[in-house]
View 1: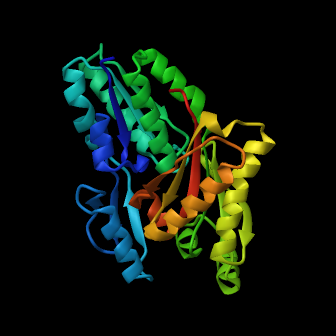
View 2: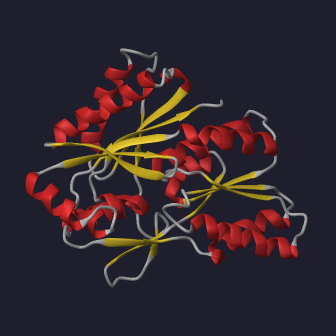
Amino acid sequence: MNYQIISDGSCDLAPETAAAHNIKIVPFYVAFEEEPYQKEIEEIAVRDFYQKMVDHPHSFPKSSLPNVTDYLAAFRPYVEQNIPIICLCITAKFSGSYAAACNAKELLLGDYENAKITVIDTTVNTVLQGILVLEAAKMQKAGMSYEETIHSIEEIRSSGRIFFTIGSMDYLVHGGRVGKLVGVVGKSLGIRPLITLKEGEIFPSGIALSRNKSKDKVIEMVKKHFVKHALNPDAYTVVVGYGYDYEEAAAFRDRLLASLQEYSHIKTLELYQIGATIGVHTGPYPLGVGILKKVC
């Protein structure tokens, strides 16, 4: 079907993956301290971003959303060709990207009143948003109509969950995601928080006293979610998201897969690198699992 799928850069899809599925990405911007903002991937590679965090652990980067001008530049070529657009944005509870895309849509409708532009708050982010964007591309390839794809996206987005841990609480404290007192206590005790993202927000899901124990608990959280809600894992896409440490993520993936195979028929798991947009809040060592119900 002839419509264009667009996503903001929070989806964390590799450029080659986005290109293979004809997905247009509107990048976020990141910067370190007084340095100028750079477009993620286009001007600073994700690996280079994490390397800089590792090399300068006391330097806290920041991110900035795609602005209205960025979305106008992304939308206009398709509008001028009368190609309908589906734009998928990071949860509006984390960023103003969705609002910027909506503003760009309204400006274009002033000049092109018959343009078809649907902007969707995915209520998710990072690798989970990437799964949703790829699922939309699969729907398109399967021949689903513009309206059918929009309806299906809106139906499955609430099934999405991310269960994850991080290497240090410093970045969450600096970004205001947890209180400073909690962060100081957590750092002094070596506590690793366990976090769940659902319905557009993050929720504390426990603590662990070491990195290895936090990874064990993430695997337990995944199993508990499927079992507690009587969900069939085979009906879900399951992926592992990581930051800087690929080797750790690959070993974690193998352990997660072994656990899943005790109660599902899942045979492989993909690894996705968490991008700079979320990395500014998690630090260089986020590690977790994203799940989303399949349509195709």
